[in-house]
Length: 313
Image (cartoon, rainbow, N blue to C red; front, side, top):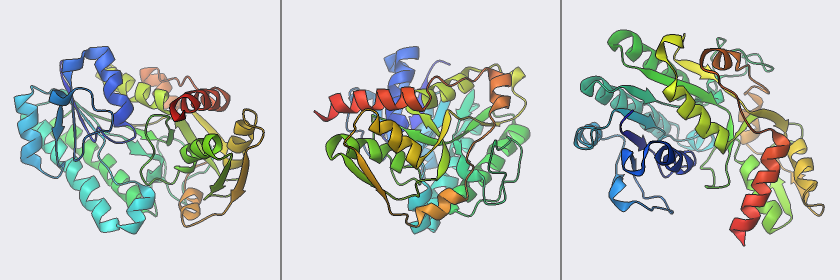
């Protein structure tokens, strides 16, 4: 891969993915694009203002900057998507279609697009959810992820475009606050524990969901992008890092901050969380491209508290 374009670079994942790609492939070989500049923008000449709904603009960037790989991250997430479902459909689906069309027209080497556990739904097996299973979500975000999975499979089969995707669980990051997802509590809780020693959680204490620490999320995206295509038997893979309840996360934080207190006041996001798996089976990703996470609950919690404590000072 000679040059990558990261669309949605100012978001939670993009803020960590861009520097990781630059460390690996060289600073000038990674172009970042978003509708707004990231707060920690360092390479101004390598950032481009982009509306992902503008196909011609994407095409111009690919041609002018000699792009061969796109990481398409722009998306409206689950909780926000339930407030503005039509907007979520428009951005999530039409931006993906634009990227795929640009990829087809310019014969790009690879397109990486993250799906989500939101693709699953109430009728999906809750524990150790398999890679190939029922996909009947009850959120607009989930609907766009299932549709997106079908769309990238279509472009692979119809046009031979090398599309690849991972179903990401909840992502926990010390770099950027989340932006309207159902698993946001797993990031917010750290900030509030460090700043105020207390947190009001919007899901129940016993709510268990699959999660992943950001370094493992970045690793999954890059590992999949680099995988030998001849070994990939599908376009979409389950990946996970750990599963825990909100109460288990609070207890782990309390090991580092004994004064930390939490109360639970579930809101509409509880219903979304209840429709998602408690754990997922990522054995196919492990088998076909050697996926393996690094962080578990204890190591992730310790690193988050250490990093945020330093950052928030």
